Length: 505
Image (cartoon, rainbow, N blue to C red):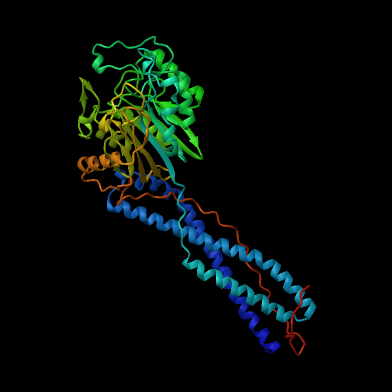
């Protein structure tokens, strides 16, 4: 090719590079415009997508899907801009090397032609794949592990109901592997932690009256097992009166374990691995936050929801025993006591902002439900109860729930590890017959036939119709400096172009 032909192509190449610069500027302007809309979208997404009842119609779901599409558009444009920026950065050393080549070969026109061709080729290679690029960036999955009642033995009326040698390690030893990798580990502490029998309740009917007081030294087993939060809202936390409650609070505080559910400490807020959690607990018993006062419970949950990423709600309610495994959706009474309406409570606190609902109290496992993309375990049964608690039949079966959510608490899936407590040993262990999974499957099918929920034989719980909206984060595109092609290139006088090997040392 003649030098004159090469020089003739330079203006056209410069024009194409200018067009590419114009497209980059246009994309930068569009991204800035899209970023300006992100705060408004973020304000709508959590309320309309992640909260189910606040948006379960097709219109709301369509809006959520549109927001996800917009998020992908933001990411696609950002990907293109970042790649183009990388090309622009890489062009500088290439230009420098090319100038050295020109200096050695004395062919400035060839240099400019090669440089312009290089820029155009690489920009086009980046532009076309970027048009098809689309990826989502979902947040990390959160894992909440939850178990039911924990009662590691009692000092009342004497030491006969404590574990051998006062060794509480058997309470969790065989189950510890099922707690691994939990972001938060929850349990219901079914009784006070105290070394004194002062304030022990008196019983009119010993057949229906038990007094649970665990030695304060047993707190080490809770800490060693990794418990992050414990519910103190239950009917045995007041077995030793105010003395027992104060002793429990001190023992847990000294061990670094968080708790909630007493009138003196209704909630707790904490942060772990960048996620802010709010925890509250309720029961129908004296000295605890009342599960029957639903408007007050909703207000507590709303306040937590305003400042936390995930709100965990515990409730100790419902009648007790194998005759009361079903969720009736009505107020439950047991031995003359109003034990609340667990169905109404769970739904209304989710409406107020609750994310994960963990029930206990009936001493048996109950059904599970997904309501507005939030998980409800209506009762988790007796997990580790060394003595004074019936573990015959279904009373000795308990799940270890592992609940997977988005960083804002929207349900993704859950898994049940089936455990049992043999009556002659009372050490929680894996149940190879997986009996509690069958119990949950059957109860959920009967109690919530309208809920589309899948529970597999190996314990996986999924929601086929679930939809969890991801939060849209503002883009942070790099600033791209437009390329500056030279113009007005003067033809050179040489009559030939060197075509041999080039050594650019």
